[in-house]
Length: 194
Image (cartoon, rainbow, N blue to C red; front, side, top):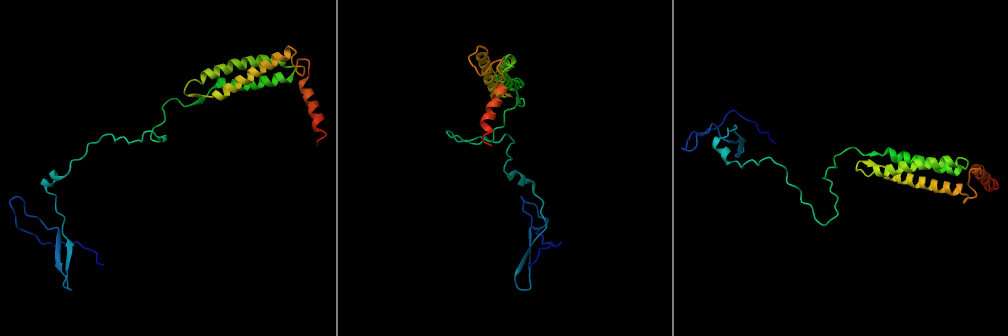
């Protein structure tokens, strides 16, 4: 295989037509070879004529790309839609505090002697949980589950505490050491098993 080389020699056509000036060189050069074939080599590069610029297709104007065609009636997920712009989602402090105090109130009520304090903490947890439910109504505030769980725990602690104070639950009261009773009950059931 022979690599083409560019030579400085070229055949020039000196004929000139009225609408076209005489070229300075041709696009290809044909040279005979020893084996009676003709070798065609590229000639020098021709400058572009001014009238060929008008023959080019028009350049399309820059603008927004066309919208993609989306099928209708399908449940396809659109990955091209950017996420909604707004504040970064955050957890509600009121909902989190309502959940923490709701769990603490249940534990205080079940302890027995701390039953009154448990009802007070449950009331505070109920207020914080309701405020947390209201705060999570905004789009960028998360924590609705925390607020609802805090609401359930605080209401449960209030109901359990009121039933224990009225004497409806004999196993739970301010004079009944519930923790000691649970410990004795667990020891009686588990000691024989191990």
